[in-house]
Length: 212
Image (cartoon, rainbow, N blue to C red; front, side, top):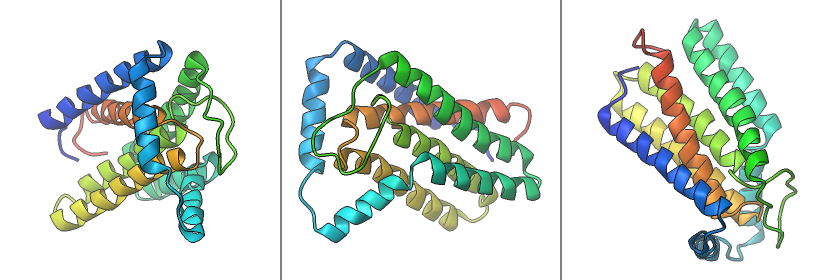
């Protein structure tokens, strides 16, 4: 894996600032947060054919704790077998510590209630930030980083993998709004905080070496 670029750091700091602005807006119940949420919900929550709705529900359930845990453990096992120990640590730490423990702590500090209208799936705990959004960013974002290193000589495949996984991160986040269990500002917070933490983990684990 190559050194983190200045452009990546700029996006990282921008993501961190965006999360803080979002956090302040939610905790202080600013009107612009409500206006933003209503605007995006109006774009996302349109009636769709039954088959497409069921597909979106499947997408959102793919980000539930149980499938995410199994996918993470499988990927960690593959990395350990391949002797990519820092890569395994990178992935496990991002998903289990940052996305798991860190997200839970923030949820319980902010204590934002979830939307209550027209839910298509069950959801418990608090709403901010979206656990599915931060987990998607940290799980599949970690895989993007690892693929970027392992496929560094195959630019077309690297960009293809980045595009597919990036779209999947977006789809999981938007699905949480569509099924009615998160506000858009929850999802933005999950994505932005996840991206910030992803870069921090990558920087920390590659300070004394170039590869995960």
